[in-house]
Amino acid sequence: MKLFWWVFAAVLIVLGLATVWMPIPTGVPLLALGGIIIIGSSRSTARMIRKHRRGRETLDRVFLYLEERAPLKLARILKRTRPRKSSTGNPDKPRT
Image (cartoon, rainbow, N blue to C red; front, top):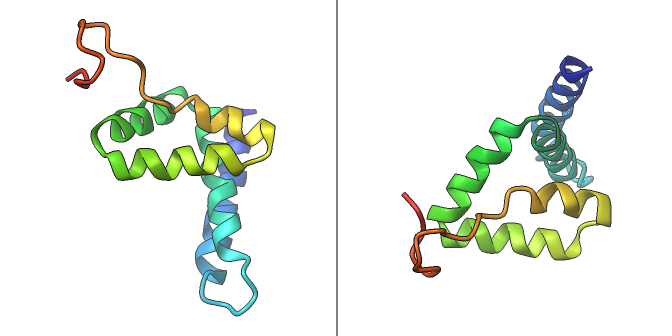
């Protein structure tokens, strides 16, 4: 079943890349949906994005913006990539 979701996400991403420059705005939503499907079906991808969000404040702000405006089911998937709180005592300093 996981293979099905990965293939489906890859098809969405390829279609999104093919249509991103067309006048009808279908490319970006297809790319986003493909990315969300990959995040939802892969823990390692969610961990990788969490790591990048922890190190890049701009990326984290973009994801927070998307979490607030996405439908509930999609927002739950995006929230899985939120950086975890530091357990080293200083919550302002990210873990390395």
